[in-house]
Amino acid sequence: WELLGRPPVHDRERFYLAIDHTVDPVTLASDPRAQKLTQLSRDFAKASGIRHFYDANETILHTRFYRDLVQPGEVVLGADSHTSSHGGMGAFAIGLGGADITAAMVLGESWIEVPEAIAVEYTGELPFGIGGKDVILETLGRLGRNTVAMERSVEYRGDAVRKWSTDVRFTIANMTAEFGGLNGIFEPDGEVAAWLARRSSHNDGARYFRADEDAP
Picture 1 (tube, helix red, strand yellow):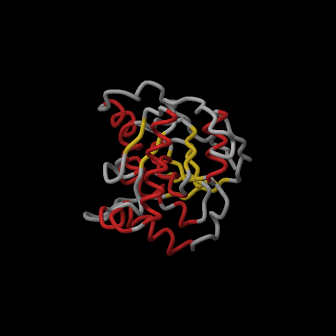
Picture 2 (cartoon, rainbow, N blue to C red; picture 1 turned 120 degrees about the vertical axis):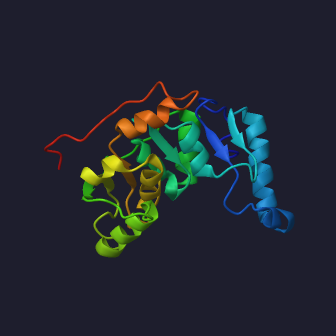
């Protein structure tokens, strides 16, 4: 952003920045690199006037965005591989490098080659106490990391997923990165609509897509 001459953000309402990961209170108190990155983020947020900025230890990057902002049918680009989390809400969410995110932030657009896709189909009932993390770890154990999903879009589907909460779906989509996939996605349904209905905002632009029956 500095090398580009500090251009204005294309849409200050649609860029989201949260300081987390390596910024716990102990690290921030003693790590010069964390302190520098944190201050850079604060200065950028102030200079650019973005609406959605969360300082250190206010929230977790992905969960705040998921709970408050993301809607099905949106394209979400993030500077972290676990941006795929938002596929749990039926968004096409993909992690890109910092330069790609900067370009999208400034231009309001990006260029993405449409990936090949695979489907992972779940059937049956989850036993009591088994959650999304268990499901995706079992999936990784059976299919292998960086194998069938590598560089592909992964659609999680099947009769079982209809009963899963958005939190379960979020967790599974989150770990698509460990699966090797570019992104993971669930078809948005009534569970997602019910989640959105409880929000006070960012619930009126949802687009409910599903794959064609003969989709490859």
